[in-house]
Length: 367
Image 1: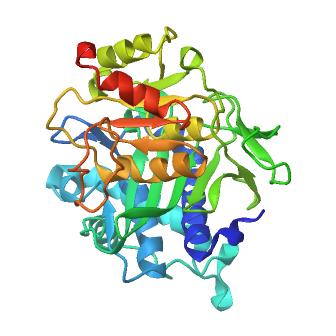
Image 2: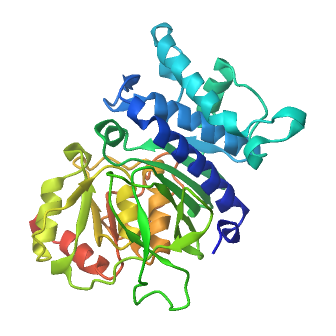
């Protein structure tokens, strides 16, 4: 199956994210410098700003009427002492755009007409970043340019997460994964025998080939390598025994109540420690059948997830055959602005173990 079979919106989104992944694989060893600390104490790098500007430029050019809700804004880049970082961001954006700009005679190098034909100046780059401050509406895109910035800096997992939302439901998702690999393997029993090749998760971080996980509502979840536009199907695990469940959790302990996760797993009879990993790469592993559970319990009951941290990954898991809810069993509601104000926490699973987990969570004794 080819990428274009998923429709124009998905193809353009996945191709743009793939271009960003290719670029990041070439510069990721140069990301430890040029880092700021935001007001919430989280880091933001040249890559966060540059990838956001690049992808927003693509989206704004191709879908000019669509709002974009993204994580970053240019405030930190506009202060006087940020001049060196600002210049690096602009240079990175120019490098990312260079292979696609019009060449001699008006031809477009790389065959991509979805980019503006210009050499961006500083203010244009900052404006692209700030275009991500749009408000959600009936149809909009949500973007996390570098989901898992600490993972990027640490040499661990990170992804580029883009999703399109219509009427509060995620319709298209593209997760760029510079440090993950897939290979072709036997289809699981839940996949029809005549389906395209099934993707199996392979080596992480070390010698990873990278690629893009893409999903379209009612059309499945897929893996696309960096070398072509053919797709391999993603399918969740068929494990039904909770004692054998493999769970995923954020690498950063402050991202959730890890003690509550352990108690929940132990109540299920699972004593294997969770796999710790940054970003929505966890959703990709779950969609590929490399784990069965992804649990996120906030340490503060008033905390609500940002939509860009869940939109793309949630659709990927669902279209791979899994299930995603909050800790109360409610579907994620993407109609409440930049945060999931009607949801608390996250339970993502292969679907077969979901009710058992929700039952355990409902027992007050776990708290």
